[in-house]
Image 1: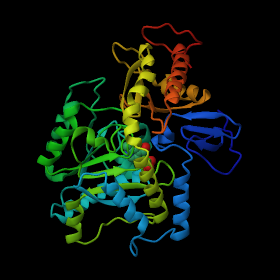
Image 2 (image 1 turned 135 degrees about the horizontal axis):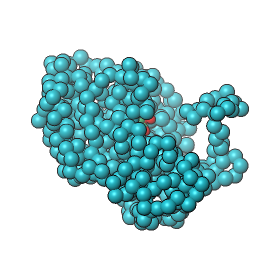
Image 3 (image 1 turned 135 degrees about the vertical axis):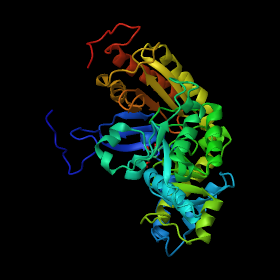
Image 4 (image 1 turned 45 degrees about the horizontal axis):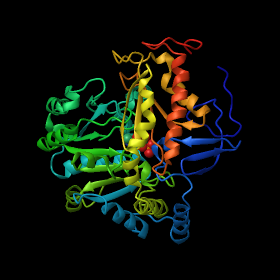
Length: 453
Ligand SMILES: Cc1ncc(COP(=O)(O)O)c(C=O)c1O
């Protein structure tokens, strides 16, 4: 393939591609420089929860920039960070007390892991360092976050740089209902085989986002893993970078299961993309252990607790509270799934699942055996590409079945999405899927197109 160099001196993740230039965006819609409209059914990377073009966020950021754009948290506190902590505290159960603000989900995951490690060191239990995570999973792309992620195609190149943390299978209620991963037993086996004295924390997404495709575990799973962790003195870190902040119809996904983690990690919807903000929120006693010990959290980044970024968070939370957007996500859930329901009849569609305004559509080559498509068919990518050509943005993911195979798309529109837009998402996605499956070998149907791509 001949490489087409970009017109401008910038490069993106996908090299040699031309992208439309986004010039304006409102609500769930984005317009490009040629005047084409796109229905943003993935909120970008599951980020723009409050929708595009909310002027009051821009105003809050601009006014904070004029007042105090930046001070460092080693020397000053600031009104924006304090207001943000208060807004969050209003929503969280009391054990989750102290917030620490950073810029990206990956950074907050790394900070959460360091906090867990430091907590055990300051408790005199210095052998506890391992973090058990799950496969598939995604916790970020910096090296520790990647080491904890179960996404083989992201990891393969960097094997020598990744700490070999223990990993267990994530529940897959569609393929393996009731297995040891679904019941939580796999976690206990891993902790016992590693030795509880070496395990600091368990990291998981209460409702899985992109890596598994909106997987909601069985009701008892989250309670069971939390109970196993308590019994073995293992901290529970809930990664709600994607599933938190109202996306699933509750402010936080852990609320669906009646379990409070020891450390909560937030990102994405915390500012809906208006500024790069993430947070970890810790149980009171974890931070207080450090406060009474070294008196120091051994983690520093230039842009932690930054006023301008926190101001975007405050304005976003106030906007969400005033417009009751989390209730809206809960109330729109039936409409979203009604719009997607006709897809279930297609021979290549294996499962449609999710919670709130987070849905996953999984594609399979055979609905009876649930066999995934061969990777060469690129089903998820092709569905997303055809949807994009129709002015619909969905988020493709591959590899969740065995590290290589597994095709799905995520649908996660802004929480302000209109009811008509949900129907439009269903219709455009159905047409895109029909086009792709019509060209692909699927058990139970005859290819009607030009054959495999
Ligand atoms: C569950 C989860 N955790 C962590 C991250 C990493 O966040 P960021 O891309 O902001 O570093 C992501 C990003 O998609 C995510 O989905």
